[in-house]
Length: 238
Image (spheres, rainbow, N blue to C red):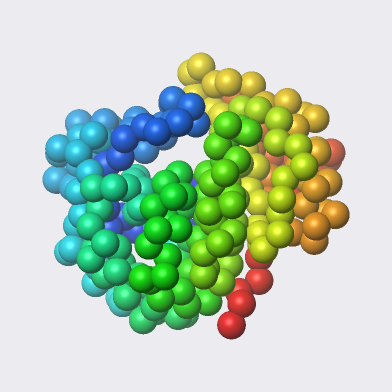
């Protein structure tokens, strides 16, 4: 586990590592870059590199040790619904989350089809927030797969936002995160795209969180939208 600088969470927990790219949003993958750094630092968990998807059963006991309630991003360095993660291990991860209702677990995937295929085999307690990444209209169907799941809290991560997303169907969606791409060669995010999504969320009564403008210097670009920050969060559904 590790404390996180990600604005919408407190810490990360990675019961799996490694991934493979499946859409254009993966082009400058943060987890891939970080894996290379951690491998170079000699961290055992990342010694096999990013392209090897691996489960780490020894990490499953960690959430039981946290003494105060946490907001936790699950698998910041992987994708729990990757085809190479066995359903048995996914169930093990869900069991840990089910047995620790005092914590909020934020799970994010680009594999929305597999999420939908497996969702009825999983126990969805109120503290599991399930999200899908949507970077442009080419992968908009991920939202429909998420919508059909039994997750109590459903959210969208529109990051890196690299295209306009008009007329989103936000039915049964509780939270939308928007963020621009950062790094050495970031693809631009337009103001009009962001403000349109913010207005869509406002009209649909959906919590809106603006994470960052991104760019080569994301700290300098900041996260103000129309002179204010948007830090709205969803409400747990008992």
